[in-house]
Length: 124
Image (cartoon, rainbow, N blue to C red; front, side):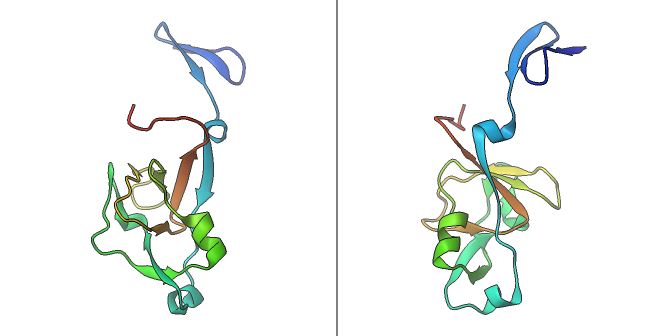
């Protein structure tokens, strides 16, 4: 039985106390770039993760597709070590933590990126 004190805060489950928080309080959330005909033909083609690339506990970078990313989009959709990647389709919720498998990589709309706002250590 779960008893919650208010909307968020202290919760009890099987005599174990824990704090609950909203995801947005701990992470910056970003949905990836939408694929389009224009992005497939653009001049600045970059590798990106798609739904197929995000596997349980790892990113498969062996055969990545490419699309155009503007300078602004490169800043917005760049991956950095420790980003939590969550699939929206296929096996919904499949996750991996980006470990700098490539020096530069971006992500597509089928993936949600959760980037820690503070000193969160994903290895714990």
